[in-house]
Image (cartoon, rainbow, N blue to C red; front, side, top):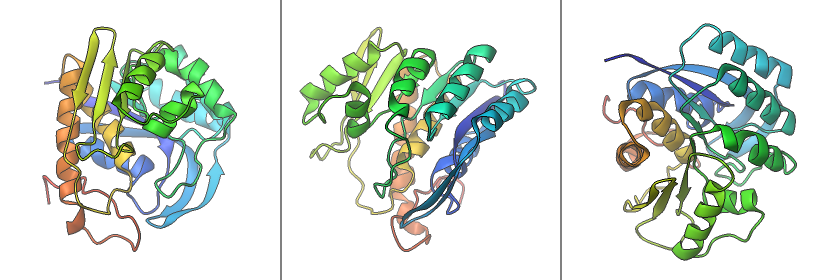
Length: 266
């Protein structure tokens, strides 16, 4: 079987639970070779974000040129983009190199609530990136921000917002229902071919730092191995559930700790 080369475009996490570090761990755990482009240097740990240093857009573009002009990239995950100029630089290079299998994690807030995307960048994300990506993975607050609409309060409203996001031009939408008061934590996948509901029991752990980053990286890593998004989502969610179930075996930080990316190996 052909080896999979995966690219992550995101910010950093020195504590290793989210961002570029979590993405590369996820790629490795799932058998993909990881490459990376850094959009922001984030001083953060399990207790929150202390500072953000945004990379100049020209240097983000230069990193993308370095990777995409040399390495065959089979699949890509995009995370933190921080500012409008970075969104525009990434959108330009994706179009230039015709990058495929792009999973966009619409990162707007850290688990601690700290902002990771400026408000004026949301429109650029909506107009310039969404039409180029294969899948977006918003949670309920992110879906609401992308649509400039109220937060969905139930699965009926999740349906409405999922369809509205699909209409913005991306190939598929996985809207995550973790913010609903539901023991099954339902997610809904919307594609041109239909809709599918996915559930997973809530894991009793406080160690959920980087869960969104990890899920989107898993979706990117697994997509080339499957013929469709439903099978990819099912495999990624099953793997993440095990990573969450094993999270308490790690001893990382004094706040919200990371999931266990290497639960199958350690």
